[in-house]
Image (tube, rainbow, N blue to C red; front, side, top):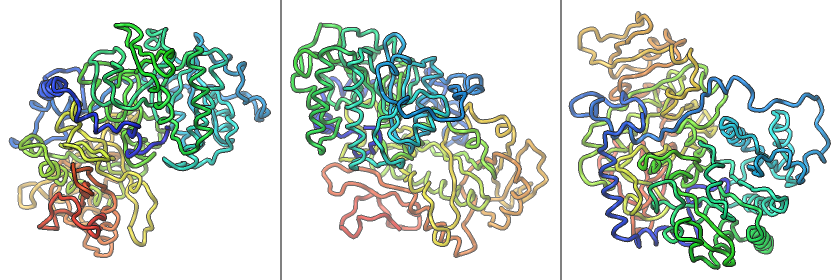
Length: 630
């Protein structure tokens, strides 16, 4: 459903891990060879982000050997945001009063006004997800698709969308306006509302493209869906092992992941109407059934044979329903897009990304879309008061590539990065700036059950840029914590922030590079006589008074970028502030999960690992150890 967390979005009636180990040997060999060739390919298919994140020292990555780095960054074609962003997405109504409630009732006539080529694209939600809904609408609008409708589950959302000119209807749900949380009774109520909605619209005779609001359209999907006119239903899935390497439908009898109801297309056929009706009746009869599980159960009552040899459709449900499974490489899940970057490896253009296989709740979903630069934030997000702090995280090549990809090498790599981020958080707090997080490099994937490091049969590269929520508790980082216990809050931005085309000119052009140097070296002294644009040479291990005194002279500079965070700041001399800072950032990191055949199998990240000489990346051995390292 819409707001699943990482421990649930991939869950299905047939656990994935059982199938992973049953993957045929040929598939594993193919994937291994493909990953090997892809990692070391010199292709320029993806431009990636600046290799300046990595030091050019002899023991580290530099511009000449950073193909792996560039190819690993999810990158999609961006619309001309500067041109299209200059006009409203939709024109606001020319009236001062809300129309009567009857105006927003779901009827065939209302849907008819917005249908194009007999297709209507629909999502729904409550006011808590207004920004996701606006993002969903904007991406469709930028693709020149206007045949859409949004179902409002509360009056506040209905009014907000109406005054923005976005086509909206009242679902009559009387839902709370706050985030409902995955698995709650309200969450399951939302699932039932979706099925009721599908069952209501199909009899109108229109094709229905039903979407969750935590997904984004990247390319017009309608021509693709029209390639399969015989299909009653085309569904996305939680498949993580490729069954095709082109843009054909996934091979139905090789798909092990559950069908995912976050993106699916229904034609108003007798078979699809029958399925929708039975699905609705099933859920209304038993409020313990998860809507997605119910859909999978019904579809698999009869499964096979193929409709024809080459079309990719399968007879399902009652033996008459023609079902197609959208390829996971281009109708992407949170895993195939953000972790595997499957579409990049197969040189395909993605149609959509759905933020499944993800952690840290709604905040984690929003951050992932921001990392991919496909979330439409307001202008103030890109020009924060006080400005930004960034740094170049120099990572030795040995930590990225040498040795086996196992727990030890993964945590050596991660801990090396955590120490630099800890220092950057301290300086950002001291200077009252927003920290631009660096890209995080992981050797091992993160899941909610035991696995061998990466999913067997998948095309996950090692190492790879992992989403921030694989390591950090983004929801905690954004939470208001009491200042008396945790000190001042520290705001942050995604690693791709400075590459976002929405970044305004006044931020791009207001820049100070800080080159750290040894105090005893020539020309290395704390000075504020730098003329912009320029480079400020600044001594390593300067105390907080020196940092505040020098950088207060550059308070109007939008971006201050440090050459490194190695030995940039030894810590707060004010012991009370140091203690509060520690209380805060210790809570920022989460767990890696999970070691196979171990209970528990997770390992806690520790922001202060370097202060514990005996620290090892081992799962907790006792119940007492099974807690965050506070």
